[in-house]
Image (tube, one colour):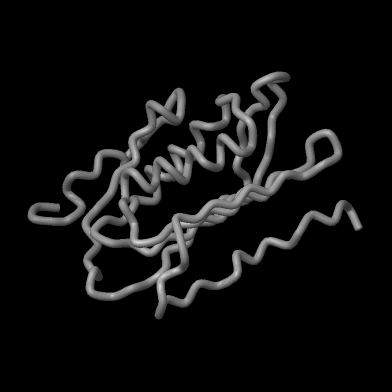
Amino acid sequence: MTDSIYESLTQLGGKASLPASPEEAVLETVPNPQRDARYLVRFTCPEFTSLCPITGQPDFAHLVIDYVPDERLVESKSLKLYLGAFRNHGAFHEDCTLTIARRLEAVLQPIWLRIGGYWYPRGGMPIDVFYQTGPAPEGVWIPDQGVAPYRGRG
C-alpha cells in the first residue's frame, strides 16, 4: 500500500480486539478521494449494545449514522470497533448517542452529521435520541433513516 491514502490504517486487514472502552478506541480516517462531490455516507448498526449505568443490565439500540464528508472518511472497521467498545460501557441512552456523534464530529469535521439512536424498551418505554449538526446541506439526497417507531410485538 505504498503511496496510498490507506497506508496509515492500523486496524484494517488484520486481527483487532475490541477496545476496553470507547475512550480507548481509535477511530481511523482516510482522505476523501471524492472531495469535489457532495454525498451522504450512512452506517447502520442494528445491534448496538451498552450497559445501564445504574443496574449494569444491557441496553440495545438500532443506530443510524449519516454524514456528508469533507476532507476525511471514517474507516468502517475502526468504527465497528469503536461502537463495539460500548458493550461494557455504562451510560444512559442520550449520553451514548451524543458521545458517538461528538466523537465522529471531532475526528471527521464533516460538512454535516446526524445520528438516530432508536433504543429498545427498558422499563416498558423505548427512548429515541436524535442529533444533527445543523440543517442538511442543499443538493445532497438525504433519505429517511428508515427505522419504524417502536410498536411492540404487534
